[in-house]
Length: 512
Image 1: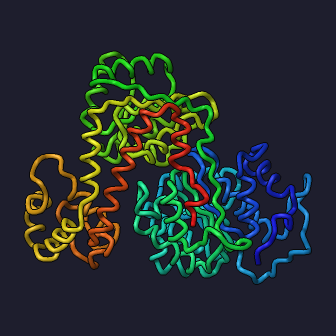
Image 2: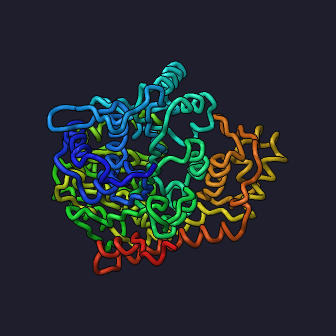
Image 3: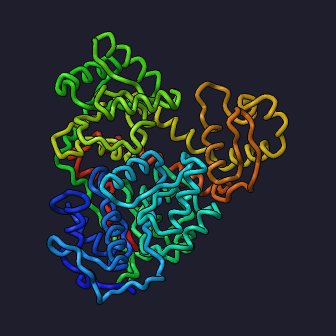
């Protein structure tokens, strides 16, 4: 039954904040969101990276666990609460967190366990033996907080373990992944309404740092939660805007790589031996700039998708530990990076969207100290990004042709590999990445299964309707083009912070 926040002791969540998380006070609207979740109200939380989104579901998870033990915090003692008895036979509460980031799951679980909280994660990197042990732990009630990917809900053994528990709260981290209009769409996230139903339609909190008005509406639609309604039936939107006054936003118009290099040297001189990230679009540009920095004796590491997994892990570890404070990276770097003292984030090439840019600059200054976020704006970079937008949005005809080839030409694909397939469907000129995009989307939608060896793939499902529909594909291309245009408008604006605020703000009139 939904309850008013006033039904709960006023000091209980503050005690959890102090005792378990060693913090003195809540920030922004954290307390309002927490009270609403405890009372049974749904929320969509849009809060900048580093703004404290995780506490919005972690504290309710601890609260529910404490309530199940019939204890609350009162001064220095935990005392019984007889007015809300928990039947001995009642399933223990379990807060479930959906997240696409396996590395971040592990980091958060490790941090929670270090605070004495019973949290765990189950993902593809967990061994079979550990997975089965954790399944049993879930069923036995040993955990109060569980991090999983949406894909885990396809596993019967996992669902069987969940049936032994009561889920009072479902948290959906990186909620923009729900929407195909977002910048990191993941098809399994589109199953969240089904997942909610499987869990008994629990109170739901969706959290993201980046969501335009359209993406926010799509999140609510996919969750089957109304924006307006009475009491707690509706989903309340909490929008923090860009509440990071310590981030100093700058745009510098540059002309060519030599000009960029001069600005990079100036930035590094301003922040000697400080942690920073320099983002690039193209690996070849990154490597060229890296060579210049090495010749100048500036120590750094490089991170991009062409590196081996072991090398990427080594680079990330060295950066996070402070052994090497400077990293040159493509946008493959940063998901799950939670380092407080990053003093500068520089975009040496124009980023592909306002959403990705906002998320990347949000990695700076999480400790609240002054940090620099600088975009080196070269108009010549736009042609590269415009091409990338086209390549990341194959049209419906391309998807249909590719799917038909995958059905009919299995033997040829197995024999000659992806390059043979590329020659049949793509522009042979170097750089056309439509094939990689289309295959990744087909695999995400479980239309194909791809083995580790190049070219070994098979069709396992129908062509998804959204990929075969010309109107949907055209709309997606147009939206991505508009998002790139927003970067241009941002660079030309007179007030960078206000532009970001306006871009991501949800007007009440847009929510209907």
